[in-house]
Image (cartoon, rainbow, N blue to C red):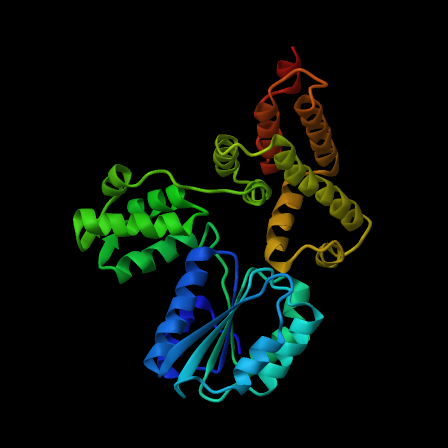
Length: 344
């Protein structure tokens, strides 16, 4: 069965499954989920711990041999299988299915892997582990969910934040839950349990926000110009390559052009998005962008992206990051500068 990360503690209080699969690329939540499973396994009698690191040349027979062998002290065991890539290969898939068909009695198998793509989640080995145990897929909170996540964590530590504190902390640690957890602990040390206002957060919390080019594209698609501008400044400060930033933005513009053309010819928007590999959780962003842009406007935006590309490559004068800002804000529906003022 599947259990959300925030539901794991309640599940573990009720039962301990023979198999757990924890997947995701958000280190704080994944690490805390694994720690909770380890703690409960120790509480339920797993005194011995075996760790298997799946690297090139890993012998999958070792896992099955461990299952079939008794502990040295005949105690229950926690067996950790660390699969960073989330791709066990044919031999690994077969071994995992074989293990799931007959888990070691009394032992717990904890499989830890990174974010699993759609194919992995549809694989036989994934379904075998899920049916025999529990799959915990870790998803970092998005920008709308982050304040609520922060509030739960702060209240769990005895802090009572007001709205201003939540908003400021969310802005300063967006995309970096590890930093967020550290800042909450620091606030607790500085002020002790009780109320926390925006002034306290402003004084104590450094700006630890961490973004990716995908965050930038999502904010621009959502029409959030101020957030897109802030993320772009963060990427510049982190030394991100302008070429990669442009790739992320231009990809979204090209996709919007294709979807808009097909919808104009009578196709259903959701079906078009499905054919072009747009995941369900991003369809609302694309819908919002399509409502905001006309077909001619999207083509003008492609010309903006082409100009940014020339500036990045040195084929045209200008500042690459200014041009990227123009594209990002254009995608968000904000006009920063008129073309004539930029070329004068």
